[in-house]
Image 1: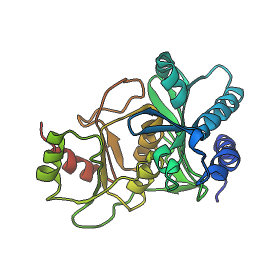
Image 2 (image 1 turned 30 degrees about the vertical axis):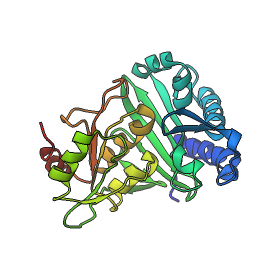
Image 3 (image 1 turned 60 degrees about the horizontal axis):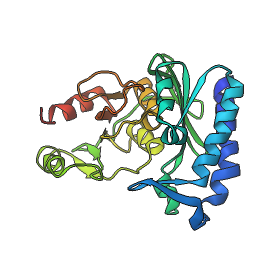
Image 4 (image 1 turned 180 degrees about the horizontal axis):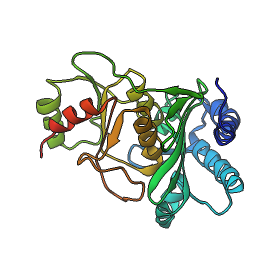
Length: 267
């Protein structure tokens, strides 16, 4: 691993500690009572809550006065989302919880630092490989301290990672008619901490996200854009972390692939 900045090294150490203490020992070892359902197909575990509590405390000590927006805190109290327009840390303590509860990879932890509604720094951590994807606005994108440039798969047709899980019947028809003829369709990993790296590291070319929650996307959008790919709203506008309830986001390994994909979507 190349040398990290002091902040990146601090965040990496926090993420490693959380993984080694809470995540990895419970992977494929969760008891039934350690899993609850927040909603349909939306599990939460003791690991989510334990990691969020640890990171909330650690980041508060690291930067006193900067607000914290954790996924589980927001689930318990929606007023937490009001902090998203100010300087804040955004935490997804266990991204890919559904995978984790089923004893399969990928899963990870995502942290973003936002100000004025936009991410200014982000970290996506894979605890099983110790991979840290990180970026700061205007400074490029990195994997374990090595600067990277987004690359396409090079395949024809391009590889489109798409989930039908949250699509309406009409949207499924659109996928079959507008997208399937022009792309190799593959499933998503159900883990943004893995999907964004796939878009920059030559595994996928484009992916569309219906749900765009800030803890899932703030860090990844910044990282992919800093790598030279493109992540933006379907209308081309920038992704903001404080647009509650807004749907639709496209990430791609290049601007050309992003443009081509969006042009195929119906008005």
